[in-house]
Length: 167
Image (cartoon, rainbow, N blue to C red; front, top):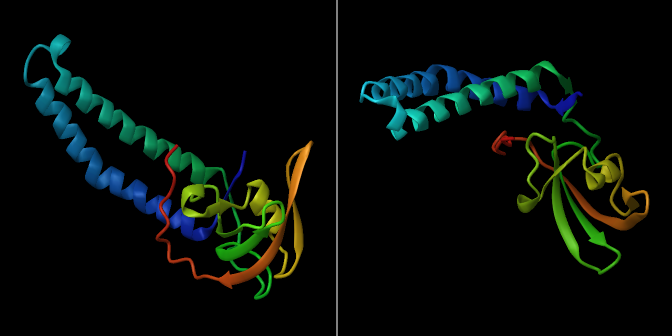
């Protein structure tokens, strides 16, 4: 499996790994050490909680390293008038006439509650490469699809402020 990531996604992931190794790891190791010194480990909740947090940090580091290792680098540049990575797109849903705005991002940064749609999602795949005014079919499953009309496309600069998803 290859994860589609931009160079900025990878840089952000490397920064998080560095922070977790140099800042979080020493703090968590110290918390485990202090909890262990409190005595009987069989009834020491602080010890198990500290150990769990340490393990969670190490798991996140391994996850990010694996994501970077298996990543397929995708360009975040697109043509001026076409939907591409980091573009904000206003679309009209033909079914009910509602209008929604989405920003096209990589799967690592997607968050549908904030309008951040993955390029790997049905909507993201359908919109990529199309222009304002295009009528686009979104294939959700073999049995169901719906249509969108692209109202506008805004080329937004990726400032890297979108948070990386935790899995």
